[in-house]
Length: 606
Image 1 (cartoon, helix red, strand yellow):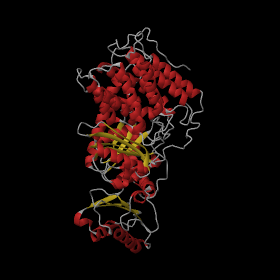
Image 2 (cartoon, helix red, strand yellow):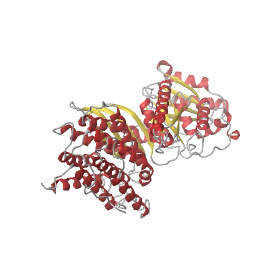
Image 3 (cartoon, helix red, strand yellow):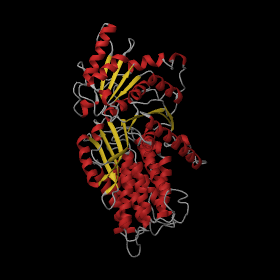
């Protein structure tokens, strides 16, 4: 195991950081993130052992590169740094991605304050490392030592030491500052290895590789195409391999204070808001969860786009009360049974009379099992599919915030108020090369098809770029193939999501979509609003729609549903069952407080 050091001998070295050098660095960082994705994913045991840090960092850095690609070639460093930061913030994934976006945001702030907007001198580069260390620490609600935060701090100390130890005979350069920071980051990773976050903290490893990439890029600044090789980064990679080989992976994963994330769900979204609104949201999130991050780049008026991240047991409570949320994605972090306590019991008071007296919980399994063989799908006629290496994911769309926990517990990534970019984000979060999308209405279906076309085009571009390098569409997280199902309301989405829960690892894409579509089609739904959603009208609609072979009635109450609708509807079902089947309990009734804007009441029967 070795730690790279620089003497400057044999390198051209850059006198200042410029926009072309920034572009070259981020492209090098993207290449390194791609090649080390699997390694960094394998290191991920903190704060949640979900093996996605490498993927999240790659997606975040790629978003920064994509934003830079849209700038004109003549953009100066301040403009390029701001574009990269904004792109990273918009595309950040997971807690690690959010912190990497904060790194670029801090760099952009220093570039904006520099005397020359076209270049960073050594002293300003030192300030950038120190700003990164301070802001990443402040970006985390409960900072934990031995993580990316410690690596950022030690790198800043290295940069400052190089600056202060310079002399007239050996003046400080951008190269020596970058190399000292990279060396400090490497030493930090070695010193914190095995101290509570697995063999190596995954986020710390990712930041170290970004810093070594910068050092390599600076030293190869005379090359118009960026560094032909990454010697410092190559040593860092070997160092990580040696640390992992010499450790019992995952041992001591919980630190002395037990500061692992305990939230059951991860919630992420973009927030258009003022800085004051973002600060207030962060305080609220700290009361309901951990791994909280609210990172953004507000303009001179204090208005901007913020990336929001939290692990929480109450995902609906994590939604903002002010500002505009976009690309809201929720996924389940900890495995639990599909049948769970209804959302309102963990989040907010229930609507009156909306939960069965016996406390029964939501369950579509019985309906899904019967319908999957009785309708268009006959499992007895379908041979077992060959295992797919990376599996098939599920994206569930909804406009009902009260249902996000139920959808997430099926294993689907949930997109609230879906539009194209939110579905694209969810596809990246899946970590799979294929996914089915369950739209909740025609608008969501149109957005899903648009997302599928976008990802297909991006996958083709990635394959062309990766020709000859081993980087193909199937290794690019954004190259997910989407297949849009024919679901058209929340009840059918929920039925389909439960029907295919846990099957993505051993079922082919087309077969999974067929199963989901068959179960959804078997559910008869009726949307009621206005006068049709009055209490007596709902009861009458149910009585007219029920059949003797029905097993389950699900009632999803909208935001403006009358408080007694649930009880009256349940009574109507009980009377029908008593008269037609001889038992009031023959048909199960489940009531959700969906809180959707429309319809006021959604009935699902099957």
